[in-house]
Length: 84
Image (tube, rainbow, N blue to C red; front, side, top):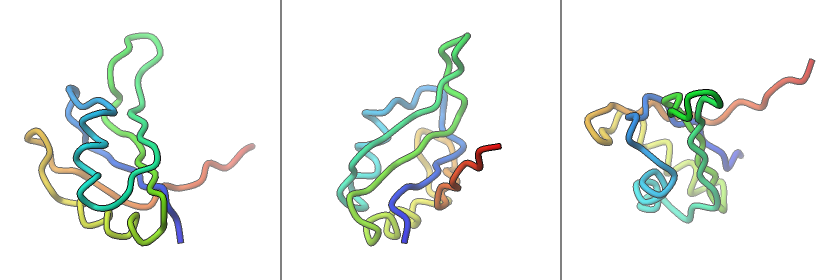
């Protein structure tokens, strides 16, 4: 099972600290990444949360559809990028 979750529909004000704090209630978080536009330094509205174990990541899926700063989160297992 995977340990890394995709988190979409993030409010523009969400940073790594806030996202970690939110997901800490679902289990032990190992790493958090909010994806930013390289040119504008603004959030692209999505990120990734990696848990220490797969069971906690499964718990984190329960955040799908919940509200964080007036945005309804979309949470799913992260897809591995395919290299061309």
